[in-house]
Image (cartoon, rainbow, N blue to C red; front, side):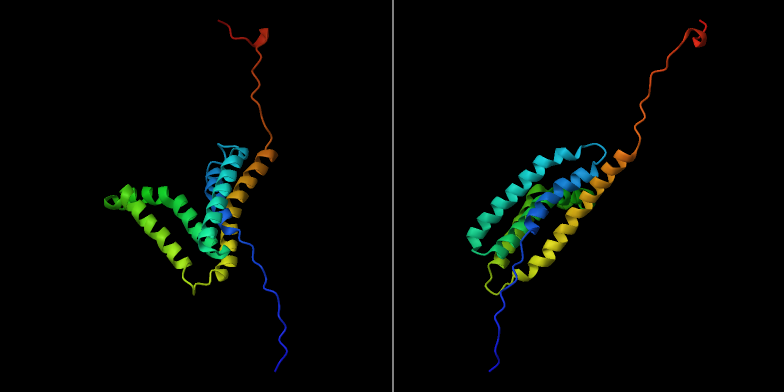
Length: 175
């Protein structure tokens, strides 16, 4: 009989629900990078992350598993963030289906399906943690990069103020 060494399981931190919660605010800031100061996003990002944390903890109490709670909360956060975009897209592309109760009903069905899938005993949600962490990190890096790139460009651009023209007696118009 071979001597099997027991290696401790590598713990994977669960970041993706929180990053997915921050992404809509960061994406909106990046889209309006010339019109909004980056500081304007601190409070909304903090509130989004806090809301994700509360949802995550409630789902962890319900599912009794960190990974299952993370998966369900990520799906629910994504549905919440995408609701308006889906509705507007349906108004443009398929006006017959652009009804609030239909979009809300489909969203609730997807939310229930995510919860059902996560509570199945054979579902291995741990395997999804690393890829979802990476995907959520990539989502957040792009708007952050765009905001930082714009801010650095603003610092390098010399500010030219339009000085009022001074009219002296010799170059004043003859009336």
